Image 1 (cartoon, helix red, strand yellow):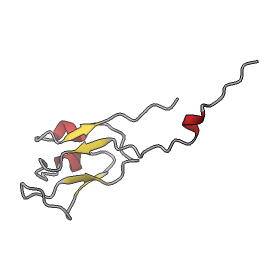
Image 2 (cartoon, helix red, strand yellow; image 1 turned 135 degrees about the vertical axis):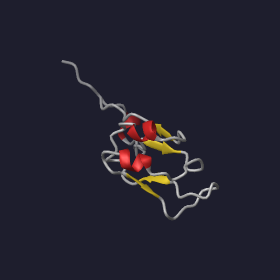
Image 3 (tube, one colour; image 1 turned 90 degrees about the vertical axis):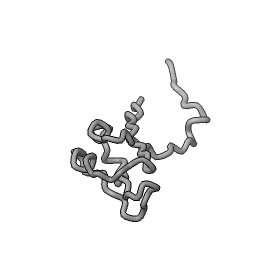
Length: 90
């Protein structure tokens, strides 16, 4: 009989929350094209911040709902998005 034992090092690991989209807010011009393109509606302009260019940059509102479809990155004229795939479950 074979018994699998979970290593002690992984038992108490705290997983960091996954951020599927990284946004270069310093380059965002707040055009809103990504907001319109997002099928899950998880992007919005951040009215609390004005970047050095004088615009309200976009922000991710719900990382858990984001599917990493990358439509935001495809329509962005300033290439401010880096989209990451979710880690695979073992």
